[in-house]
Length: 222
Image 1 (cartoon, rainbow, N blue to C red):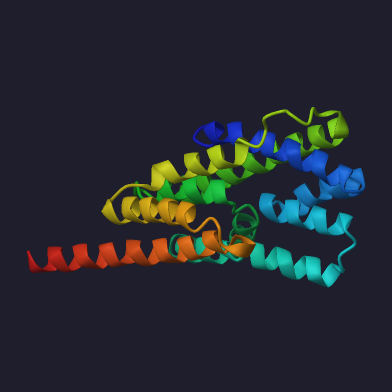
Image 2: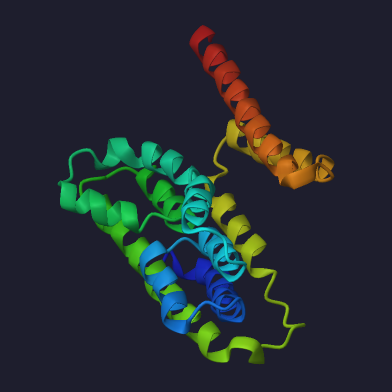
């Protein structure tokens, strides 16, 4: 929980914005809070609230949310070897609490070794985020349109992801992937439908993997 606290500086404003956006889009306050209680996925909640407000079909909303959250399958696959020994009850609880921020902090913890009780660490990160997300959502719902339009809360999300990224830059492949992804995202920013981000992400993963393989071969031949 202590390790997760710095990321809350970005999470709390993000939840505040969601609560205000949801009620302004016509989502009832109880339903808006239910998004955070049950879905618990920031970017997916923003999209779902906007689509509800525009009258989109339920099936389309569910499908869109699933597509947005496909990255969680990668998070789960990465952590699965560490959690294989746990009961199904533990796995269900930890999968529900798995977010970008929880994954980033927990990944750093699993790299440190001594993993017998590390699942409690993952639970602590997830519960800290979940509780703060509920509070910030409630505040956003309560304040609603009374939030000043020029309040600079849009900085929260990029700062949060930068804070997530930095602890996981531990070697040449990760640094290379991060630098390549950032550069390509800027260069490809003009592509339609935000495709520049998708292309940059896929390319960055490939570049990072290539650097990893080159280093692995060099170490094997040394």
